[in-house]
Length: 438
Image 1 (cartoon, one colour):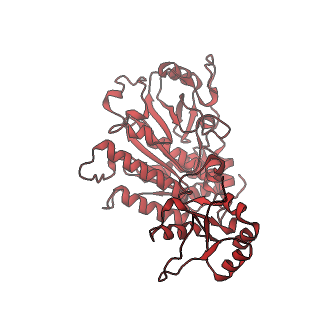
Image 2 (cartoon, helix red, strand yellow):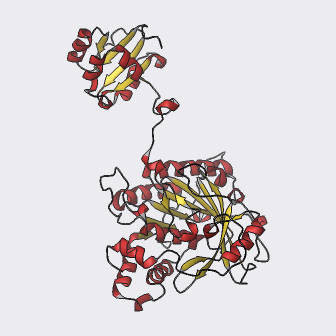
Image 3 (tube, rainbow, N blue to C red):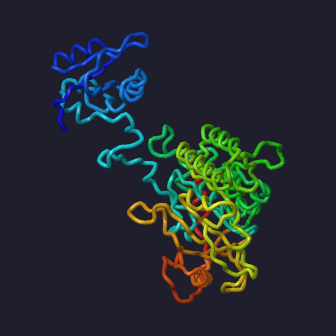
């Protein structure tokens, strides 16, 4: 780059102007709002300890060509702006940034965002291969009515309370502390008393109120940690209401795992001229931005079209893009999970089948899990625990035309006895959650 071209350094004080001149640099003082701008020569580099980009934008509002204006924050350099002036023109020119550096930059300037690097296991052992959450995810869970979507979301929410996701992340002022209420189930059709009882059964492994006192107390703590929405209250159910409440709960309680269930029960305020696809794309974009803003997981639950239903309770493969209303559910999500309820697999009993349809990052060192795999789960009602059925998983994989996931590690194993052990040691995990010994 040719640094011999004309340039003007714009600094905030007379002292900095004098220092620049002493180092044979061309500099002027940033004019006050009521002052006339001085004449600028060539490339204009705005320098401030912080906020230089905003100051640079204000310079362009005076009619200066934006392609001429660049900026440097001094707080990222030893000695700040004074240190930069001492370092000289070549150093300044190598560090100056384009006006829109926050939006567009060279690959060389790419920075690692810790929030995008962290990976949080979903919790159950059958999900360890396929569901590894990244903070800032928009997840779509799709399936037929009554297939178990809500139960799966609730299950992931309970495990979220037990894992690293319920802690404040690195860099937060409360780093390492447990969030007071990490989960909000915005579920319009579910019975909160049933959800409450499911937590009791899950934590006590089916013993309920007859369990040991500290296990019952642990269940109560989890019940307090999960928010629910009162469906009987007459409120606006649009997504504007949801985003306001999500920000409130995140700020007050640290809530960072949100379930919107189901999509069809929200009030959809479409603008004139919008079709359903345009509307879904807009809302999905807003929820994606919200997940980034709050460093949170947002799960949207939606139904599939009637053409994708199986009439005999068997498997009829589908994808998240088959969700009722718009393919944007599939294309806009960072993770997509298909859920089906099946009674024709090995064992001739009901299974909840999960097909992991989409994972935004499935390759490389920081994956979010493996996609295009399937697991078949049995729900143990007494303990409200999902257990992977390996034989049924193999049947489901054959019917779906994919690999077996979960404990099968993607392989097509021969039939074998199922391991019906606890899926992840709820009591042990809960002991960590409560700070008590099991």
